Length: 158
Image 1 (cartoon, rainbow, N blue to C red):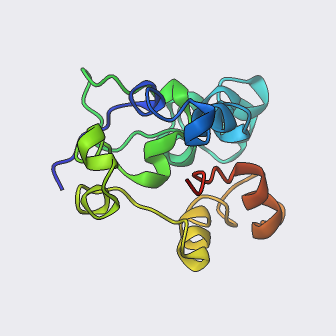
Image 2: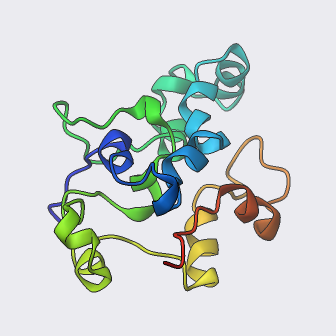
């Protein structure tokens, strides 16, 4: 809807302090932060080849679809595919809600395009299974509750 990706560095400016919940630090410890990097391995290229893909995993749209934010990202964007499954992968392109004046107002943030899942477990699960599903060549079984506990990054109540 006309929104642009701003990149994890932009989000991290405000979401790195402990008083705000250190969402950046929590994300950096997850496999989501390394999702693109996994595509640069020989194992990933082997999987891509076995799937009949014409390109190495790190260049295949079929792999990048879930391992990096790639859709509608202009070449001059500050966002990098190397950031993997970053903030905007789930919360939506941030240009419409990144301003502090907007982020301080929940309704304005959502109106600006931010997808918030904190209050809706079904919505969270629906977002996760867009990638964590049987189309994934390495997916065994997606145990939502277990996996959500590993990536959840709640805001402090204050």
